[in-house]
Amino acid sequence: MKHFKLPKFLSSRLIGLAGNLSKKNLIRTVHLFEKLASIQYHSQGINGAIKLIQEDHPGIEAVRRILRQANPKARSAILNNFILGSIFFGYKKRLNFYHQHGAAPPGALMISPTLRCNLKCYGCYAGTHEHKEELTFDEVDQILSDAYAAGTNLIIILGGEPFMVPWLLDIVQKHHRMAFMIYTNGLLINDDKIKRLVEMGNAGIAIGLDGLKEDTDDRKGSGTFDKAMETMRKLRDAGVIVGFSAMTSRKNFDVLHSEAFFDTMIENGAGFGWLTIALPQGRASTQADLMPTAEQKAQIRGLIQKLKRTKSILIIDFLTDTYMTEGCGAGRVMWHINANGDAEPCVLMPFAADNIREKSFPEIIRSDFFKGIRGIHQRHCKEPQTCMMTFQPKEVLDVIKQCGARETSIGTMEALNELAKKQE
Image (cartoon, rainbow, N blue to C red; front, side, top):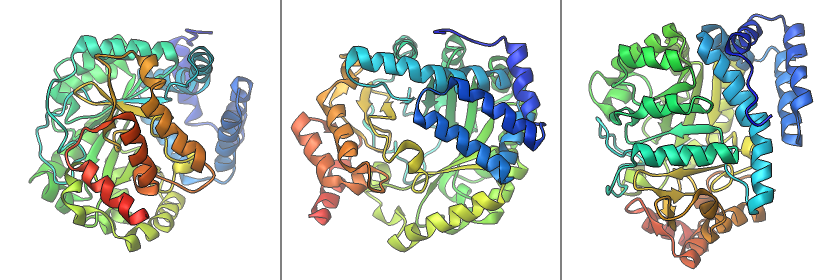
């Protein structure tokens, strides 16, 4: 079963049909995956999906819309690369890796091949990262080969702006068994790139926004919003899986949680949306007024729950959906390799003790630094938590000092020290 894969025409047909099945038959289809479930997490996910179908939850209509809009190769990749390759069979490979090495590889690997960008947004998490060397094609190729062998099949490409890298789609095409999600401002995606994305099928696109036209243009530059929406519509029409990503700040809090924003995203083709918040790192470490207030954070759960109940779009929220990963996933469910090759527990936790140019994939997973970060989660896994840097800053600081890790984004250590002092 190591390389099990349904033929593309069959997998595409099956997934396409799922978008039009009756509630009763859709439930029957989901039940078929019970035979592949090997852990409680799988069973919980299957039962949760069935419950949402029974309740006619808007999120199910969002899934149906994604499946109906997706082109045949994208449909095949949803089943083969993501559902089978990442969730079910990928877990078994990760479990084998754990038994062999004593530590589990991440379910998702984030890679920033470059920090270069065609924009300069305030508050960008990458805004104060060190600029040394970019990752090469061969280095990313090796990372992906190691990740695939370990069972990590979901790859999230970040930046900078990923499409500044000329070989980006070449590496996605070479690793055709893996599932990719590319986070981009969308401005460099032309018709030729869309054609390649359609031909490959194994990459989805998340377009970065800051709200509607006024907020997005204010942060990213005049005309950015309209160009991004044009790209989103083109991707949707071509059958490429597309959504949005947005960083919630004190400035755009109201618009990002408004019905008008989500209606606009659905109208332009977004099937999903990823919402995070400004944290004390990147340019936000020197612009603390960007971070949402305590009063705003307290409102997020209620606002997100209302939107999920009423809007047919899959919404993933940084603060309120951590139950899906049983709390902060840094160094455990995910980790990040920045453009300098530094291995960070998370893109939002920019500290590193090791570099992929010096240590292998298994060595980094077993490292004292990653082990220490995972230990914080183990000690607090029964408590509600999001980012460890804001939830347990003192313990994170202790691990960093004990392991000789260093900040990879200027100003983050200072911000973490301030948070640790407030915790005392």
